[in-house]
Amino acid sequence: MKTVLIVSAHPDDEALGCGGTIARHVSEGDIVYAVFLADGVSARETSGNVELEQRTGAAEKARQLLGIRESYYLGLPDNRLDYLPLIEVVQCLEPIVRKVRPDVIYTHHHGDLNIDHRITHAAVLTACRPMPGCSVREIYAFEVMSSTEWATPSESPFQPNHYVDISDFLDVKLQALQAYELEMRDEPHSRSLKHLESLARHRGNTVGVVAAEAFMVVRLLR
Image 1 (cartoon, helix red, strand yellow):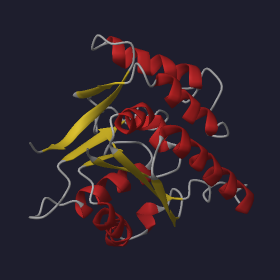
Image 2 (cartoon, rainbow, N blue to C red; image 1 turned 90 degrees about the vertical axis):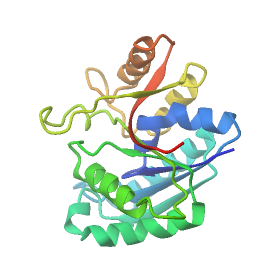
Image 3 (tube, helix red, strand yellow; image 1 turned 30 degrees about the vertical axis):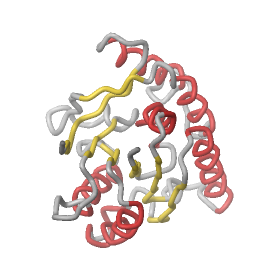
């Protein structure tokens, strides 16, 4: 049994990036936690308490569908994590890492277009420095549509080298995404349900399975 921590910038990133993998971990007896650094709505012109409650409610519905044991909401400013000194973001995350003591962490790709995603990645690597006694033995970076693929290709492209077979968990991933219906978009858009299903099938077909999620290995200690 492993303890897994999903470190996401915003509620919905966990379902977009690794929803099927979360469901698979849970089915195999692993314990999964999630932490969301930013609120996901305060950068919007129409943001308010209602929007925040809706986003949190969607995250809790997705949590139950995916089987996440507990989620932590840190409430940092949306799309403004770069306004904070990195050490402040790290200090918000470190207590969660110490409490959960994860074996495995999934987080954002360091080259994403979204600034919160990039800061989240940096905060994870800083909070999980491989010091003696560190519990974290595996760190994987996931892709989030409408951010990972929109970044400048020449800077830090997402080049997956680790795949998780989610053939039996694709439906659960899609249900979790439907919980975030206000964040989904209609076709043609990379964050449409239809495209996200096609992406999972594409990632799977490239490695000989029905559906998969793709990751970049950041750390793998055996």
